[in-house]
Length: 223
Image (cartoon, rainbow, N blue to C red; front, side, top):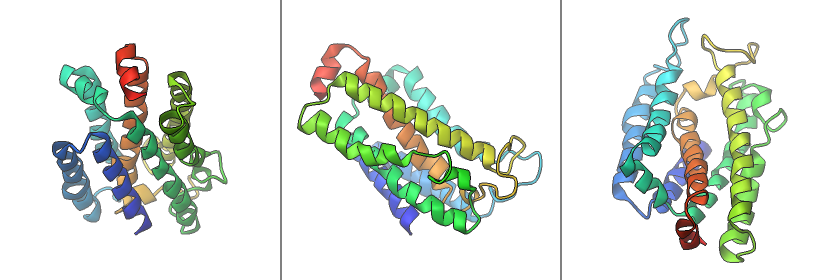
């Protein structure tokens, strides 16, 4: 239930960042509920037979969609129209995600190295997000360079845990946690983490960085 609510919060904040684009909301919900939710409940991803990299079907489409946004003129216009302040607040979803992971570890669904007892400090990105939001968009004490630096550091933190999670999951490329692998993301509703929550957080970072390195006219509009 906690993880489902967290995913819902991520989707809602992204919807707000798109300036309430119903088309974007429908695309995300269709991918989340009609496709990935149904596939996960069928047990498709839980079948970890050797030579079947089914996890790629969960991770690949969102990454290709993000790449498509950056590669096309229409996609870039969409990215440049996203609200920076809401993209910043979206990172608060990383806090409940990190709080769920220790529980999954106790239930032997993820390895310890994916929790904040291991080399995973991604919770700090979520905890600092409201502070950065306030300093940048309310108090106006954090400028574009400061916001850019925070996004770059937190993007590195995200990539660290994503790589760890992928290499800890049962697959032909598994490198870590053979004694207690990352099996949670193969089951409903935790497939929503790699299939929706992480891509939205990644997109929030990349879209923000794009806007912050864009011409000053775009930055001035946000600040």
